[in-house]
Image 1 (cartoon, helix red, strand yellow):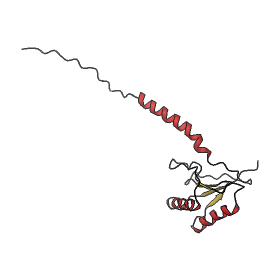
Image 2: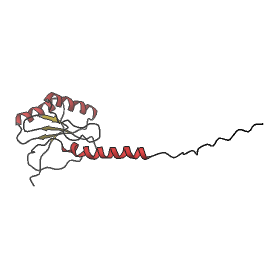
Image 3: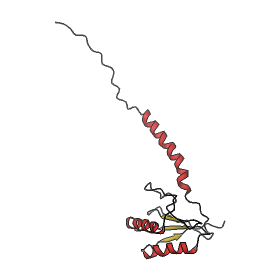
Length: 150
């Protein structure tokens, strides 16, 4: 009988090659490191001075932040709305858009608080109309943001 030559099989390597995973992780780390300072800046407003206490939102949903700048433009969630569910815009929006977004969020998070950051040179009427529209639509939990005079 004819004997066939035996084939040599290469050794099987069952290890997972983690080098591509490390590369991806490092790229993601760099992306997060570069975007985090940009996200946390928000809209720059001159808050009125007055006694202020830090509120703790760790046990409930994060507040919706409405900013009124010195030119009486509205911004909603100009800060990071914590979770990663959304990142605020830096584009001004109309009063109806602000009120509709707050109402939609209140339907999802009934215990949510609205924080109003009004620039000290913003018109009183602009802030009053915002408060009135929120009150008319059943939003009662509104806090004002201020700076400590220290």
